[in-house]
Image 1 (cartoon, rainbow, N blue to C red):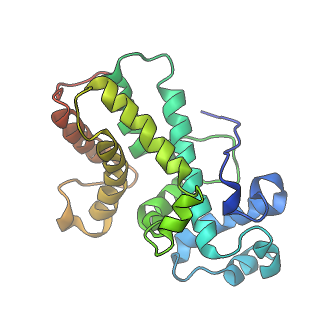
Image 2 (cartoon, rainbow, N blue to C red):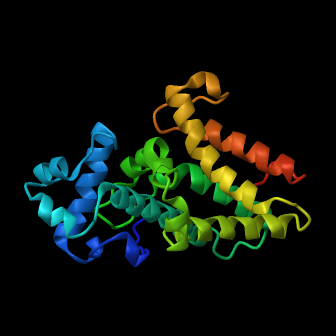
Length: 231
């Protein structure tokens, strides 16, 4: 699927919108590849500039620090998943089918291939799995939330919670289930790959089918409709 879209994010995340220039797009492209290669702790703007054959000053014109760059990348992914949910559930009225598609999107959003050549969704997904929580497990989370930096995640959770409420109006924890499905999708892929005794699922390469089955089991059992739902 090739989709030409522009992801809209909070302007406070960047100094200059990297989607507007070739240099900015290169910063996004190479930061994704470099963080995936060496990890966020070892990543810095000097290494990024060297990888790009550019200067640190050019990177700082777009992002004030590497935390904001990571938050930008994570927010980009949240908004991309939200877009895919809208696209994949278009004209589907049955909330059970929509929730099943949402779970599949959580697990396999990285397999979609939009016409955005400066974002490798598969590599970005690995960053979300390994590094994503570092964007908001910080001392500044409350201040950043007040400034709207987590708007895309809040909207994604709200979108899924609405489907859960439509499916079971008296379910008391729709937002909890929505955010947990997203976090579980990433956490249990990570556990299966690195800490296998923390999970009961197995993954092979980019085959995350067992994770999807697990999420469906939890979601539809909690909601009292654990029969197989055809997409």
